Length: 101
Image 1: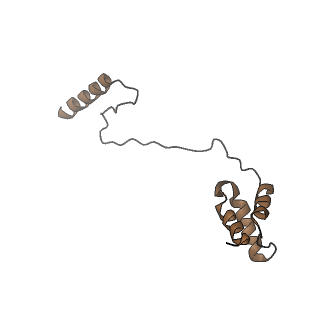
Image 2: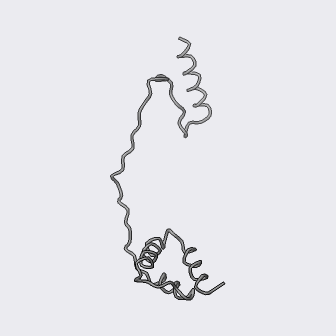
Image 3: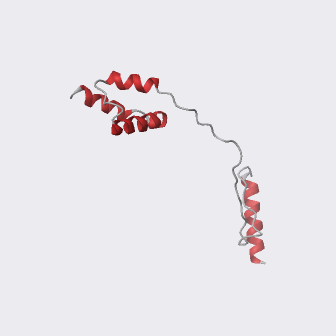
């Protein structure tokens, strides 16, 4: 294999999570002719390691969650995850007796 092919294989193998912006810019520059293809793995390694990208911050808060109750099984109490097996059985028994009445 030629060194330039190995360099492009290395480029393709870069982690997208960390280097997607670098990879996109590099390929766009190749297509525009403002960047030349790397001749050696070290060429692409140095460019990738020196690439600066802006830090993406995530907003905290602002998200919403909605919960709706169904009218079916309205009287039935669902088992909570922290209920003991005895509590869950009592809930099931209450639910069955209310459905029979």
